[in-house]
Image (cartoon, rainbow, N blue to C red):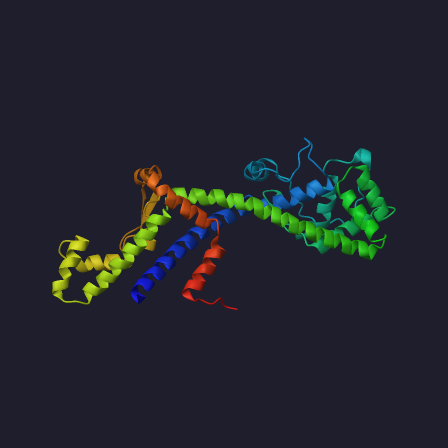
Length: 348
């Protein structure tokens, strides 16, 4: 009974490790994609443009509203970020332009001038991906100070150029009963709530990216979760048999010779078996295989024939689907499961 329980625990640990490693690969590729294309920064500035200046010249919103926009428009063709400026903020705050002189990015440009001290370039554009609510509120106060009538003048200018920010600030100004300190606190609270809402929207779109990357990884590596579970069971049972045979006499070597099918020296088979667990073999059916020999340089070989045969075999698709669904839970989930099974405690 104890041996059977140990076998199932080994099976669970092996599956969890497999899903954890694959989830880390998916998370790493997603993070690399996000950093390479500056998705977080573009997402923030798309929101700021929509909030401060409204739709673009063609009448489209800057924030993506379809999954296709997350993969195509935002990363590649519709960059909302202002151009980087290495100079600090101007000592004098420029007023908001009047209605006839306003451009479609007037407010975004003025706002960027107030926060560009924390900027560094990324492909000629700003890399700012996070703005503290306090800094946003201070920028609004600075812009209001440049107007003749203060906040009232800023609100009048925003209404004149058709900025969506006018409605938000007007409500906050009236709610603060025209008190500057309460208005600043209201702007901070409002912008903090907007950033939380934006983060939720961002995570929702990132889930789509992760789901696509996860499917690509499963298919490129052709990881069949059901087949891997069977391999784990066979591997654990075989290792137990090897240990039992290795502890016996010469008469017990014969079954090992037949099992390994290795002429001459069966102990080499034992060494190879113990040094090649099922976890290592999970990537044997990838489209490209990497072999690291004991001596010599690693070799990379094309495995397209075996990979395509597995991909076109319907019996493997339930296992592919199982692996794909497991990856959607994410690496933190599988790490937590692994800690619970093994009894590991997180360091504090």
